[in-house]
Image (cartoon, helix red, strand yellow):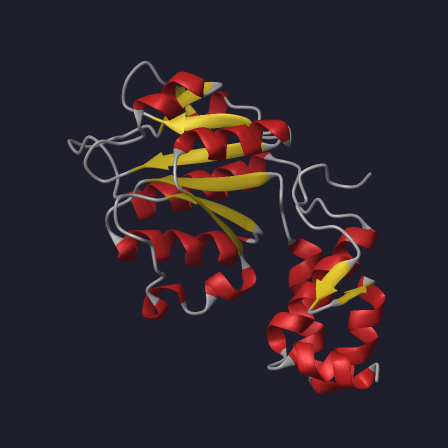
Length: 229
């Protein structure tokens, strides 16, 4: 059964052309080494789009980038950023190129992000220190958006009010909470272990493979246009 949360569809727009995933793969395959193609195949087979991290107004660019790197490394395909007053730009030394392989969606305000997630069937689970239940009580077999708040104030009131659940990581020491990047790593690891795992069907994997081929080949748009005459 195809994932209901996968955000991509065919045909794929490449410049002025509308192409199928298979056309893109056929046109770009000889531009990518056998080793790289095998790596793309392995990553695509493990991708998860039913668990999505959401970063709500984080101030520290390094923290955002660290969460991106962790999410991509764990197999997550999509990440949302509700922007703070300053525009977010990934810190490349921290992300190690993870942003190239993630679908990063940016939102100017919480309401727009929440509306998109809920329209796609996600339950919204916000991290909170107040009136929250333990993480292991959440059903991660449902599509889930895990919201992490900023370093000073946490998740904003608008997101907390709209959340389907509030969760907290159990703490065994005197510290009240973990650093945001550590908390995200622990929660995402737990969610992926408890959830459905890789969730793309054959058509969706082929489409994602085509998108990764384009991200792997410089000037792919010109190459494809030239190949098609």
